[in-house]
Length: 518
Image (tube, rainbow, N blue to C red; front, side, top):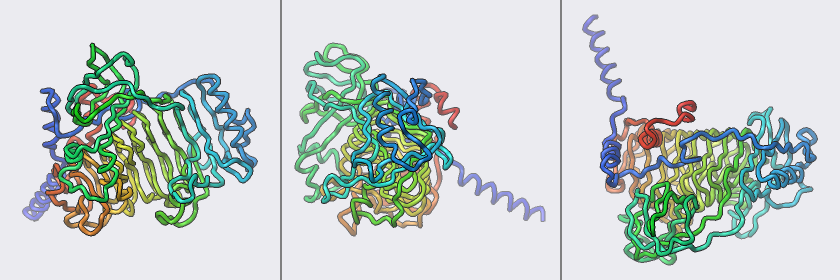
């Protein structure tokens, strides 16, 4: 009996050791490169989020503009849209403010309302409720908004939007080469630049060498009209840290190799700052069975919140129920969506960063509904997105919506994993460009043998070889020819979170907000 017990104990110890996380070799490469100031395999994702995730999202104490003081009533089932707009206007006039929703149910887009979205064109405006539960502050969208173009199923405007007003304009040409994950460029004329200014580092070029660099080893197909005709498009948003002569240093790393001959330029970045949405329950009337691309209502009719042209902004502690599209970042930078729940009917999209956004942190999203496209990235050459500690059901998978997203980290994700849920039109392929990183991804969908990132049975699903580390859960095997790095499949690795460890390495320690959060 003793020998049998010892044998069982040894088996248990062996099983325990087998599942323990191993130290990642690609992480060791990153540490060595960091110490020597050399280029690492991994991108530096540590700047994502509000204020580069160095500090927590603030509990601002601006002047309060209570919507009930402007005619809203959370108990009468009548439209509160005009009252909310009046409260927003008063907060904007004050140059900052909290648009406050006491507990109750506030109706928006009733039959008596206009068919336009609520638009916030200012900085430092925060929507704040008294909780995202069923007994909290509920914004109820009684009707969806119609499409701007009936022929375009994606053209229904989201019900609440932020906007900076104005547009981007050319500042100067870039005259140097710069390596990815560095911080400096040289410009032709720095006279329109100043420290603290937000700019867009931009290129649009269909040079064959640049297209090859951007997509290799994928075979560019004739149907990929956007990249072939318009070219590679990069729109990284940066803040200027210093200017010495014609040398400009950014606060954040550049994530793309710059060749001066491709015509890189700097543009002014029109934006707002300090916009927040917190402690609110957003509910709508989407109760049908979702069918992808059946109608404008399915695809975009019940879209709720679009955070556009916003820097250092946030969505936190919010629930979305019976919506088609919960939260979308567009042309935004270094902002955070955290502690988000999605409930009710399956819709089109959960939370995504698109429109050329840079440095968006999507964290702790629990998609209970299981939207058709789970958390992820849209198009517009979005870059440096971090999707961290998010969960969704086995029947859906991450989003990577073509139109040249690059440099995306899915970190400690639990949910389905399969082809078919990343979107994008054929002319806008590939679905994702260079430096897609899947770190300790736990798959819960059925097993797959020889998972492909270049589909062999359709024109759809083309991804530049990703970096896969610590992929575990359901047994899924990969074709090594279609992966840049493949490490520790079946067993999670250390560090558990790449985002946390890169942030810790950069700052010397984890910031207080993250310690409290963990």
